Length: 315
Image 1: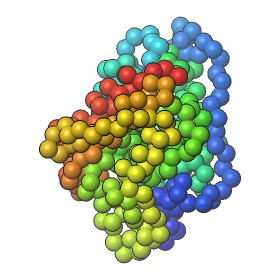
Image 2: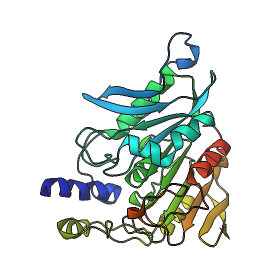
Image 3: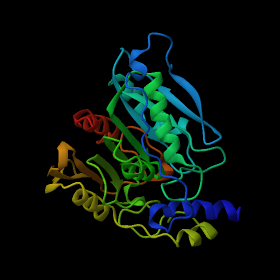
């Protein structure tokens, strides 16, 4: 049990900790130029799939839109201790995304793991796996290269943020929900749209920073005290500087929701932070999980994410 708890804290430490191993940070591979768009035979279908990478059989759920394409691709990453099935249901991205024309893949962390291996941390090479998954989707479906995205909840939000630099600019945009401050900005970031959401009453990944997992108890609380997160607004401001954004604005969308955005960023990308006053460790929208805190019902993160990705220019 102690070993499992320590691994949880190491996972939460993410890129704020010293590297724990020399696990490779993967670069985008170069599939054939035509990829899945040239195939007239059977292609990947919706449902459950496996992909072997690094000697491990990895699982993912796939939602496929109507039409030949090419279609943008969205990776939908679950949180710590959650699952692909739970993330698919909670985020509603597979259903809503496929209606918008997105190929949506919701992968599962490696067998026996509570969550993802952030870049430069110990464990299976999840950056490599997710890169291979994008390559696999490009070969098996008519994917729109240059319009590949990632969204995630909690620790999945941290993983999606870490992919900005770990994938060497392959992603056109990310949408971290309740976890953008798990990973710190990198100076070499390519222009990438970032749409983040976070509740001020989140006591698992605190909005004001500090120690995560404040609602835990006993040994887990003590060990989580070794991890210190930076405030959400500070992290988003830092990303905006890295991405060359200017003209910051703040607007109240409702009594509960505030949007901090920038008028101009490099290469037409955008950065925005939706702050939910009193919001918990939750995905804004119609679904509530009471044990995670209050949920903003007048903000649908799923629609906002897809709207932002629709507007994001191709790589």
